[in-house]
Length: 447
Ligand SMILES: Cc1cc2nc3c(=O)[nH]c(=O)nc-3n(C[C@H](O)[C@H](O)[C@H](O)COP(=O)(O)OP(=O)(O)OC[C@H]3O[C@@H](n4cnc5c(N)ncnc54)[C@H](O)[C@@H]3O)c2cc1C
Image 1: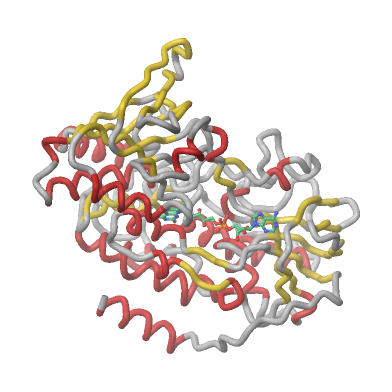
Image 2 (image 1 turned 90 degrees about the horizontal axis):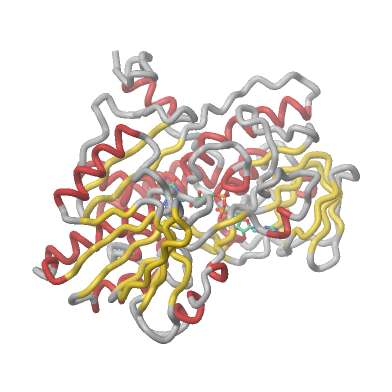
């Protein structure tokens, strides 16, 4: 707590800004840059452009009054953080120098350079950044929404609406099965579905209840984690802590009246089984918002904005870029990835605005602080080729207290004070400094 306050104070002093309400300007519905989505990626790039563009030339379109720092949800679900620390008013997070329109994009007309909103506005732009993230599709699992609407052991860290249920379920957990799921769809933060599993194990051990509870992690994936170096470490942890990992096992139904969940074996779809649970932590299926995916001009067949994976520029419309979870770039969908993309997007968009060639390249950097207990964390960092791309000059496949402090105390402050003000582009500069400018990426030997 004290550490948090110190970091917050220092960064806030470095980065002082007015917190007065940003007025909504409905008069000017044309602008130079339109940012659709004021979440992690959209806000960070809008902040960078707010230094160049006048208020009426920079519009951020987002219907949400709240901005969430979602990486904190894992710790909130475990009872180690509070939801209020992950939330800010959107008006206080977006740059003062932009016009925020509290409305939703429902139609993109890239040939006309316009976006239509749900309140009937048509916004004309010169340049467009699409940053609408991923939608949580709890509705895709029959019975799940009904189960989440009543008291019981069904919970999910993924939504601010349900995240507090996780800690309630944890506190009530005395015996039986605790099941954690990973859906058969792209997800944001692919490490989060198993982080809460390790936290549950630790919680129960601290209270002497672990032997009464059987823990399983049922994942649709064929691996425990995409990067072999960290997967090896995680398999070891699961073995040591008696966590049963069931690969290619997908949640298909939740009984809304009884604590029972049904799974399918993705390799043998005829093989289905139903199991009882005391706690069921669900990572819901996810997809880009339908308001985006139905716009075939700018999306690919899976509904993601179709961009060059290195430049983040749209493959057919050079004045359109994307950032974050809704991008077709095949990186792990994380806020850390959006941070690394933000400078690439910003510099490449500036070049396009000046009719210059674009040079900045995103290497697929993503990071996932794999919290494995209330005081330990493996900091996974990697690139497009799933090669580790580690910041620190030691091998990061170890559970460390220092990485837990980084996740809980340092990164949230960096997010609010630096990234949301357009000053954080990921740890690449630190990585170079830490490795004295030398990193052998392929073998991850730091020379
Ligand atoms: C439980 C959990 C744990 C996580 N842990 C980590 C972690 O440890 N490390 C990490 O780096 N990342 C983590 N993440 C992932 C990270 O939060 C996301 O990858 C990141 O927020 C993506 O940013 P974004 O801008 O693409 O989307 P978001 O931040 O989700 O923002 C999307 C915005 O678009 C708006 N929007 C949606 N539709 C429309 C529309 N039609 N018109 C206008 N606006 C619209 C939304 O209101 C929202 O404000 C975690 C996420 C969760 C849920």
